[in-house]
Image (cartoon, protein in one colour):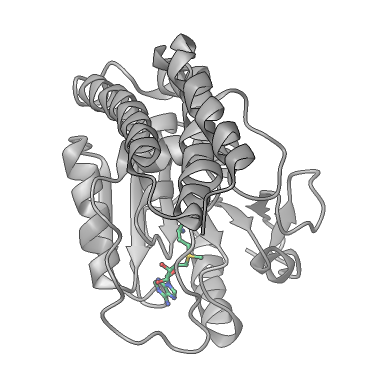
Length: 294
Ligand SMILES: C[S@@+](CC[C@H](N)C(=O)[O-])C[C@H]1O[C@@H](n2cnc3c(N)ncnc32)[C@H](O)[C@@H]1O
């Protein structure tokens, strides 16, 4: 089948436009680079695939993609080094991240900040699960980074933060970087825990820990702020909330939540809702333990 000439001309001109766009080499144009890398994948390479064997155009498109990825990788290497040196934490880290990605969107899903965080924190491919989850345990899915940015604003240096069901460790690491506090992830899946430890180690973060445990049995005795992105449901969630309520009888605690579990937390008589976000699953909810029941 002869390739469609109009489509080919369109693709060639799109490649040419990207090749001519010098602004994409500017380190701070991260979001634009991410959009163009996607465009090359889905609008150019996919279409070229469908048109048959067109090695010259495919080679140019893949070359562009590799060059843009290389700029992002250089950016992440530099930033990791600044983090290791202790020069890029707290407000400096937040500002640096937003400088590259633009302000956090109010969208429902993930945005350029998530692509940035993935690139910064993750070297290797995510591991597969090694043990079966109980039916009430929720599979891994990361909290959108914009939610973590909002959460970290509620946390101080002196807090001890726990992410219950910490998955690949993104929330735990980001909260430590943004708020400067001790940050602990509790995760049932050992492969996720090992992976998360690797992320923290590459950044030399001494106040980040990952505990491979069931959240029903973990030690929360030093925790002041807890976070859940709906890691479990039903009886597991009830048991973990009982354990947190027991902690709240000893000292005031804060719980952040995201996703459907917010509804369950809002029914707890020992918790008072502190934010104005309503029972909307795609917004962060913040609860403070109240004295009445304690
Ligand atoms: C929706 S993901 C949230 C991941 C992480 N908090 C984040 O936002 O990036 C839920 C995680 O909870 C873990 N999990 C489920 N049940 C658990 C339990 N009983 N104890 C500890 N972790 C559990 C799952 O393995 C999964 O990694």
